[in-house]
Amino acid sequence: MSGGAGDGAILITGGSGFLGALAAAKALAETEATVVLPVREPHTRESVLGPIATELAAEGRPVTDAVLARAVVVPLPPPERIAELAPEMKRLGVRDVLHCAGCLSYFNLGKLQEGNLDLTAGLLALGRAIDARRFVFLSTAYSAGFTDQLIPEALHEAYGDDPTDYTRTKREAEWLVARSGVPYVIVRPSIVIGDSRDGRYGGKPYGIYQLWTAGERYLGNGYPPVLHVVAGDQPVNFVHQDAFKDGFWAAYAKLEDGAVVHLVSRDDALPTMRDLWELWLATHGGPSEVHFFKRLDDVPDADVAAQVRMWLDFTAINNEIASVRWKFARARLDALRAGGLALTDASLATVRIAQERFVADSPKLQAFIARYREQGATTPRFVVHPDRSLERG
Ligand SMILES: NC(=O)c1ccc[n+]([C@@H]2O[C@H](COP(=O)([O-])OP(=O)(O)OC[C@H]3O[C@@H](n4cnc5c(N)ncnc54)[C@H](OP(=O)(O)O)[C@@H]3O)[C@@H](O)[C@H]2O)c1
Image 1 (cartoon, protein in one colour):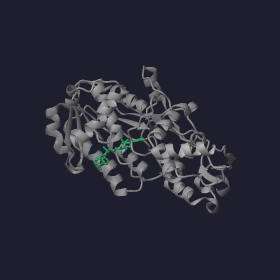
Image 2 (image 1 turned 30 degrees about the vertical axis):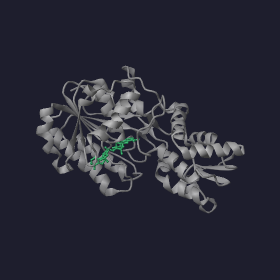
Image 3 (image 1 turned 180 degrees about the vertical axis):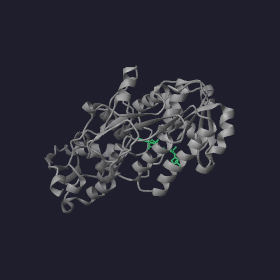
Image 4 (image 1 turned 180 degrees about the horizontal axis):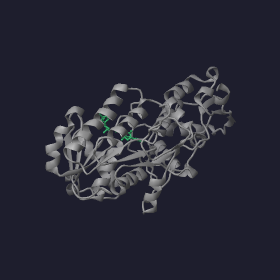
């Protein structure tokens, strides 16, 4: 088949999570289809539909009883019993499966195995049992592991070291999908950030929100006189949640079977970590001196204030990922764009909108900024340290 989103009901996993809820809102807005949302306990129909309705309303879409009645929330069995849903899914007319559930607990091997591998295997068994027309798997742009090569829009035969078992389990899940016999499309987003227009963000503190949340927690009571941060000059690839929604839907509706697509922003406008720090400091005032290091290993342990050490430890993996120059092939996304898909690329200006929204939603940061302004905000002296990883070999 070329292109999904035909007639029939659509099953979407991860409806209780960030990206699954966005996909569900899009499905309700774009189609007249029944949207089936299997979720595990303790979720209820109300808890799942709340964020979906909020997203529809934010897009100016009608949130009528008739629209919400098309969402059917069902209990998700454990992975080995998911195929038992087949008779009910056939009765509901499910043809396509959009598998948006997944586990991002970087260090919990058991949860990663269950949420990324066992769950995907269970859903593929269901896909086979209902003779699914299309199975869209939501993966990650980082499933290749660390590499300085161009990352192809293809399954990874070769791969680099993994930042954590998260990327390994996502890569292995891609192979499960590809070998399942079910017609599939794989969508690999980079780091999802709030809406490009108003900054609203429905996700957990992942990606840049982990760094901002850590900033609020560890630096939100006051800066040490000298701040040591990891801030390279590589572009960091964000994709806005509105771009995710539209790009994911276009991939589902338009790509050919077996396609893999990187849902990423174009490199030219993307901010670097250094830009992101300067944006944060311009908003929050700053300490008298800020030292920028290219990599976490370059930060001199002895000089670092205790709260900054906690910040660095908490954000270590994401800082490590952001220290690398990731090059994502983009031909499929470019083709979708050429065919009419309109996406806003992430840039310093649009990330600023997301940061402003984050700050506006944080009483602690509001108070912090007010205090700094009262004191007369300092303009910090910036010290940029060279990349010492080559010296270390
Ligand atoms: N957020 C990003 O920036 C980003 C970027 C690239 C790729 N992705 C991929 O997108 C997927 C969803 O991310 P997200 O941001 O929406 O995460 P999220 O908000 O944490 O949502 C995860 C969803 O998956 C479900 N889930 C997790 N483990 C499960 C399990 N063992 N059994 C059943 N359901 C399970 C969760 O159900 P519960 O509510 O019951 O926990 C929730 O519905 C992930 O696979 C991730 O790899 C995300």
